[in-house]
Length: 188
Ligand code: ATP
Ligand code: MG
Image 1 (cartoon, protein in one colour):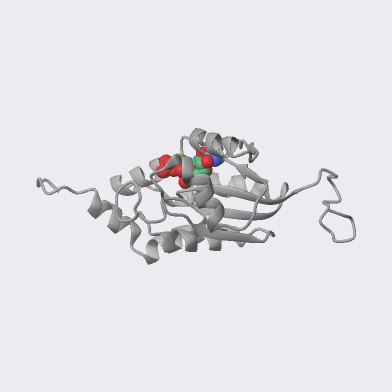
Image 2: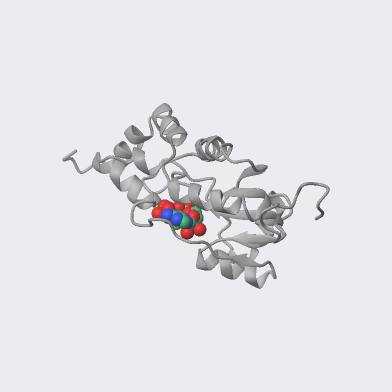
């Protein structure tokens, strides 16, 4: 960290973290995530965004594929002036090995930003510092709420960045999740 390489924010002398890790399932990426990242760019030089449960798709809880989520995140985050890496991470049903699994998949990082208690605990036990984040309008900016609105036919577009809504239209995401919400007991 020095002044010559321009890595110091001139308005703020607090050194930035070199590279930080932020993980979610991003089913879908929404404005809560987007506001968090908008805040993180002031605190970190580079950001690694882990796309968790990468192997999951085509369920009402995890409707989008890893590739679709990578596309949503990449398009939305490119609006910010920060180098970033979007990396799909499959689940390992073995919590005590999860941090090693993450470290094997992503570039090196020195801090984790998360509010997820399990994620916090696993990184804490691995000796990697974890910082908490503010929650923005959690009632609305929530994957669960957005998926519920899609299934119920309510307005969801205002809860995600415009480029994310366009991707969801492109992959016929609403049609997909509504189909997945049906049962074979009739009625719908
Ligand atoms: P779901 O309801 O499917 O769990 P989610 O909205 O919690 O979706 P995740 O992908 O699980 O989205 O979240 C990734 C990270 O973003 C988590 O650490 C979560 O706490 C955080 N997060 C989610 N919503 C918000 C929000 N509105 N403001 C700030 N952080 C959020
Ligand atoms: Mg969540």
